[in-house]
Image 1 (cartoon, rainbow, N blue to C red):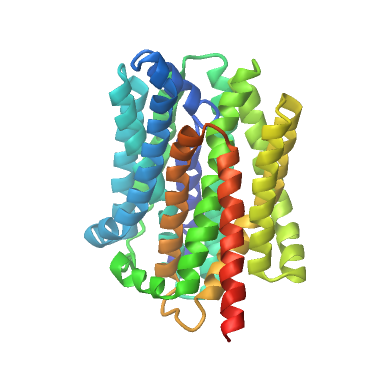
Image 2 (cartoon, helix red, strand yellow; image 1 turned 30 degrees about the horizontal axis):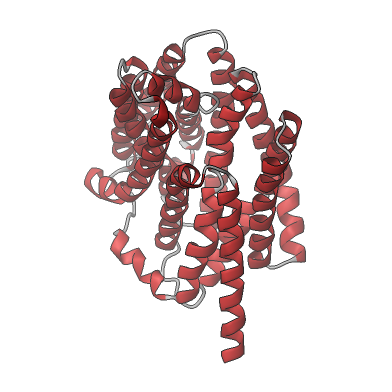
Length: 388
């Protein structure tokens, strides 16, 4: 394990550059898709065709997370798994950057989404190569920190470049950013086998009603709301006449608040309330702030709401995961399988969000779904308590 730990700095760089490349279009993906849709779709269907690639990309993230177990078992060691994922992602980035037609662009986004899902779960795979729990958590934090740094760099640099260069050129720059991970992965091999189980073995946790209700009524609605930042904010900022640089700066501000406030706010929240209560507070806050923007629509309000959502994200994801693992007590043979189910469900929430926006035509649908989920979840808990 000591030899494996020496590879941590190189693996951190692999994930840093990979997420740098994967995030290069965060500030303008939707704008690029809309431009392509305008040249392909009827005018009354532009909103529909703008949402399809976003939905498809998120669906392929789910596919990437789900297929990662199969890929890991087939490839065996971690480096072989990572090289396969790098190849798939690179191919998608090239197709996306060179696409001259909407359908090719869609295929590129789907391939990139698949790679994103594999990279996301790949951080956990690498951490779980270590046997000691303490070392696992330290490694996961170390590698995740590199991935987050890459994500911030990609969002900012992509937004700045998009203000000076065509979107295609920025996307092709992402291909260049993938060269260091490919080289590092070949030079510093991690030959340990990945301990990946089968998804059907993980599904047995869904026999617990509390877990199913938590995933359906709280996790899916909350993660559907993430589309507000990733999908609606770029369109809204563009509608106010600002460039992709402003979009990237706004997203970076929210991410930095989440990152730097996270350790302190999470400790405070978990010291004054249980994770499940913290989850309810997080969900209520997200739904409320989205509704505030809808009713007070203006650029200053949008900036305020995005930054406040960043503050909520400083503790929200942690308490949601904590509440989920707390519900697993007494029926938790291996936490990695249940966490895989949790990740898949979060991605499902992100996938259905664009369709909800298209059907209802307002972000209030997201807030309404969260409020309804909370009410139903609490009602079931009260009824269960009365029966006891």
